[in-house]
Amino acid sequence: MQLLRNLKPSTPGVGGYVATLGAFDGIHLGHRVLIARARALAREAGLASMVLSFEPLPKEYFSPAPSVARLTTFRERWRLLASDGPDVFCVLPFNARLRAMRAAQFAGLLASAGVRHMVIGHDFRAAYRGEADVAWFQQHGPALGLAIEVVPPVQESGLRVSSGLIREALAAGNLPQAARLLGRPYSMFGRVVRGDQLGRTLGYPTANLRLARRQTPMEGIFAVRVRGIEHGRGLPGVASLGTRPTVGGTRPLLEAHVFDFSGDLYGREIEVEFVAWLREERRFDSVALMVEQIHRDAADARAVLGMIVRR
Image 1 (cartoon, rainbow, N blue to C red):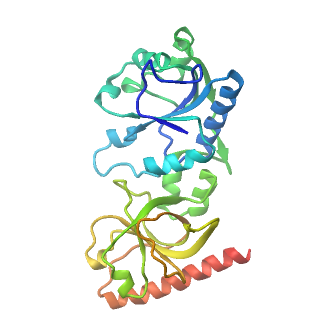
Image 2 (image 1 turned 90 degrees about the horizontal axis):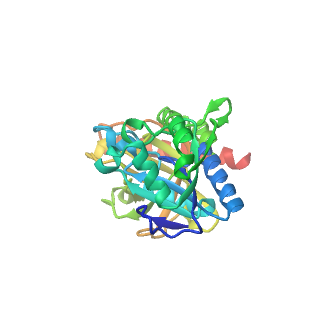
Image 3 (image 1 turned 180 degrees about the horizontal axis):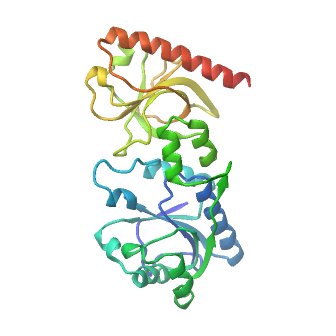
């Protein structure tokens, strides 16, 4: 998969692109339908398939702090797309210039860069004040050389799949519903960094991941599986996602303790897959009380993961 950071008339392609456009936060089931359709049309036409997205996400750009919770970072989106995604992942900087583009300018940019066919969702909107919506592209796209295909809403378990609904499920600790809408368990990728070593002194060494997002979609204590340590296998563990108020933490951090593992993970990129929400994060009156709760959390996580294994 090729990465592009801009769209220019000289952008190389295989005769042009079939592109699907959007934020693609989460790469959920609905996004997968758009991507699969773009790939199929590209194969039929002998073109390259493209996912075109933005950084920062438009919702982040328009939202004052605290921003909209982000499901996936750029790197996580790249990882999720790389296995069975498009030929090209194009990420445009969402800035004042792009925000101010009128519909015709935006569509002209796509056409001049070699986009020949667009696959968009039923609620797609772009350009200044969202004027380049589905109806606009259906009316004006063909004259610009843009064939338009609109994909209807994707349903799962009677629910319309959307990033917003997944954020709601995660915030409520409803990981099974989030997994159904995503088509996979929710997870976070990251490189293990050195922390303050507190977990090691308490008997629970953790792999610490910086979150690379201004706001997380959930917080609390979780039963997890950690991938990227043993090939093809997720190792069971317990994780904390939050600010660690008992020890004076202020910045969100993901800390994952892998059961019965003693190796060095510093610098390694791992994936923490969230299996079950155990409890909310809270502040304890002492470190000793916190440690007592950590023991209970570890036992609860082992029980949950053991039940899943036996099934």
